[in-house]
Length: 400
Image 1 (cartoon, helix red, strand yellow):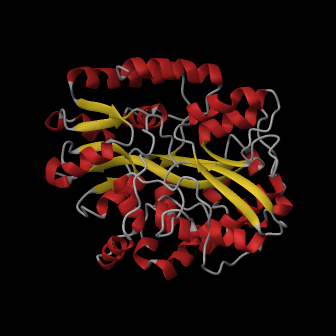
Image 2: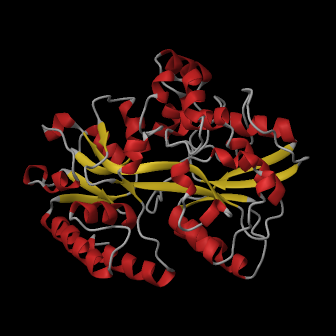
Image 3: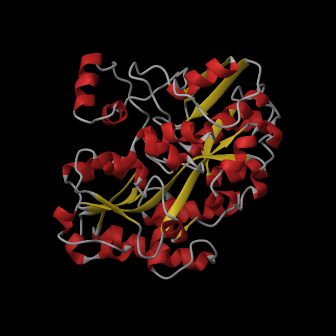
């Protein structure tokens, strides 16, 4: 999912009473929504789907698999301890899957295992999910295994728009887990008008009522597009111009704060009128307040992806490939998307979603049109030295 650079660790809570869950269901609320509001993750999940899945069947013959992912990024059964998707995967393949929610931050996860990976050691993780730019770094350093395509025949279901990854030509080392958009989230009751451009967030009447993300690539990319600058191909001097605009707006109080996921709560309770937001968060908030809106800015939205990678020297590479293949079945992908509410990377998932949730199947934030995807960008791929320079200037601009 998105790069949650400043996301706080998920707080664990006691599981809600089953009767409460049944009541929520009667009001059209999913357990996913309820757990998200609680901040309850699915740590230590072992699970999978009771639904019949179509597509190529896994050919692995059993064993173990350790899968490291972000919090709240897979479907969860009502008991809060199993994932239908993983449960069915285990039944079909006899692969015992240990699911760990430990990727709270790309940089922190990378730092945790960097020494082991550099020394050519198995880090005890067979599959992990990292955002584009960190996936690029892992691949460039040679710290990922190449995917054996014969073991992942469902790879052909990857959406065409995601097949052209500059950081991984031919997708030899990565497959998208989920994607999402960074754009504008707002409450029209508080803005008093429709918003359509990042420039709208700099309007005087919204002074102190907007927040931007503390994730550099999202905020910088959108501000650059609003200034007519190219976030994909640009000189550092262009980036500096965007930082000047951000710093001026922050210092003047135009921008209330630079946040991680906490902006969602501020938007929900009316502390802010508008924000730079992640699409999946706004979909979740709309369950409580349908009036809230997410828009792709006229200048374009940032398209981000989180990618499945097999760390170098992984003990169970073949089993990791079996899971990659399994989640690329359209109906399995649809089931996951129905819970996480981000863009499914799998061709055919939308048609499968029609059977699960027709309303969700028509949501362009989960199944975007080609027209919408055409108005997106991915921030410039930076090497380690460039990333350091960009991050340092960005942190100064936002007063961190």
